[in-house]
Amino acid sequence: MPVGPSFADVREAQARIAHHIHRTPVMRSASLDGRAGARLFFKCENFQKTGSFKIRGAMNAIFALSSGSAARGVVTHSSGNHGAAVAYAARRRGIPSWIVVPRGAPEVKQKAIADFGATIVSCDNTLESRQSTAKALLEETGAALIHPYDNDFVIAGQATAAVELLEEAGELDLMLAPVSGGGLLSGTAIASQSLYPEIRVIGCEPSLADDAFRSLSSGQLQKNSCMDTIADGLRASLSERTFAILRPRVDAIALISEAEILEAMRFVWERMKFLIEPSSAVAVAGALFGKVSGEGKRIGILLSGGNVDVGRFFERA
Amino acid sequence: MPVGPSFADVREAQARIAHHIHRTPVMRSASLDGRAGARLFFKCENFQKTGSFKIRGAMNAIFALSSGSAARGVVTHSSGNHGAAVAYAARRRGIPSWIVVPRGAPEVKQKAIADFGATIVSCDNTLESRQSTAKALLEETGAALIHPYDNDFVIAGQATAAVELLEEAGELDLMLAPVSGGGLLSGTAIASQSLYPEIRVIGCEPSLADDAFRSLSSGQLQKNSCMDTIADGLRASLSERTFAILRPRVDAIALISEAEILEAMRFVWERMKFLIEPSSAVAVAGALFGKVSGEGKRIGILLSGGNVDVGRFFERA
Image (tube, rainbow over all chains, first blue to last red; front, side, top):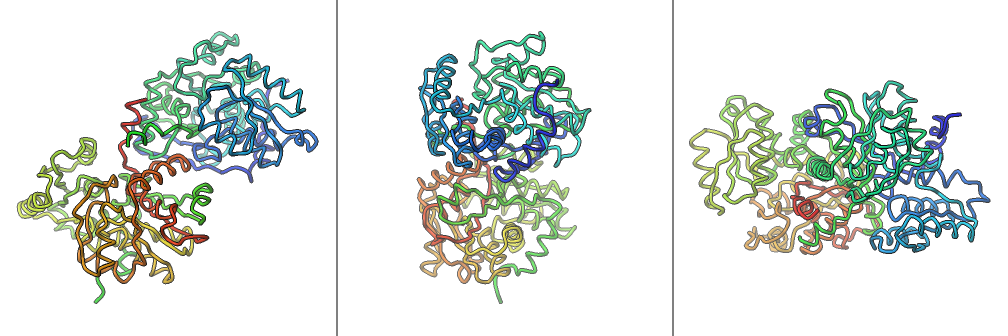
């Protein structure tokens, strides 16, 4: 029995969420092609609603709930893009949501979640506190947990970004996506290899949070101990589910240094004139810095989001 | 005898430059619409080749030269977007170019110009030095001057951005463009009112460089004395030619404070996830801050460019 959603589930997700999300553009850049020595196709989820691809999975999972279940609302734990996505999707379905957010999370992120009408529930900044707070909430409310990646509906939703990219670009040789908990990379692999079995799927991961690299190298699920990377969206570790999906499908995990993340991010800002967050730059760096044997190839890159705090630019202006 | 290019000249420009430039996207944003209380259509010349609309006018003027004249090359004076545009267009035509640049102009801008194959000729940072240096160069080389705005081919080229915007968005109530020397605003007015005679065209100008406002209010051509605005592309003053084009066509000039420029720029970066330079933010501010009686209207906004030095963001990262 294969683990994870089937491609039929992905097609269902596509139909379910189409009217609730943007079909984001696929952008190209002569100067990035030149730097990479390849033809790059950027799927711009930075322009997606709520500023990241996370809305795809959250929307699919929430709209797949039965009416009875949905009425009791949804719960998740995330101070980042997934939290905002669940809050937005729940409002769209007209149901309550509770987002468990660690104390000390940036005010601006909490405000975005609250602006979408979610109830913020504070917890301590430990995995244990998050989990126990979410568990208590679920028991109290009867709401459904929308896990950020350990959920087949979420994975099927994330897969729709790769489907759209391939619909627009046609066949590609390589597909690069950042990897954290593995939801986006799992969906990308399922979608890409269903449409084009020859496509090589590569995960890009910060060296400072390299659990997917170690898990796939060793064949044993590993956890991150250090999570100091600037790529704040990539600090989670694979689950049993995403590990099982990725093992047979992913060609390699490319490790990216912090300096490479910043250089790739700056290169995209300066040359392509749009904002990507550090987590997206991790995948760009995979193509720019010769990590993926991409010379002369057609390479798809999932730009996961554009939620970056630009305050430091304006504070000095 | 009407001053400036005709709409037939604009259509000729469109055909002449089509294969040499990007047809840039028209983008929309629910959150900016909400803030403005209007429907906004952003013409994204920040994604244009060389990072600004200036390539349209430069390309048109340079490709309109006779072979004999073109062979002697082109000269302009500008350390900014027009300098880079002339350098790029000249290389595209395969002819030499000389760009007069004041000593002390940012290294990064000089490098961009040099990378396009132009010869940089330094001058002092005064209007007189620029003009005398350019004049000496013209006499020495027999090259053609490509003035940044006081040139009908340049104006006809700039007009093509508004044509594309209207082709995509359909009829609009208002069209907003930043105004400096008046090339973009002149082209925008000619194109817009040729396609839709009822459209109101409004120039947006920094309060700190308000010559167009004073010229159109008084009916007498005025110059800027102070040019301290952060909108570094908007420090020039109208010429007799652009003043004569704008007087009968422009409905109003909206004045924008420095704080409003920064707030509009940040709003676009954060909500639309792309980079615009301060000069573009001046036009956005016109729509966002109730300067143009735009409530409930369909408003086109020319985003002139995305060339902004993001170094300060990364230096602190």
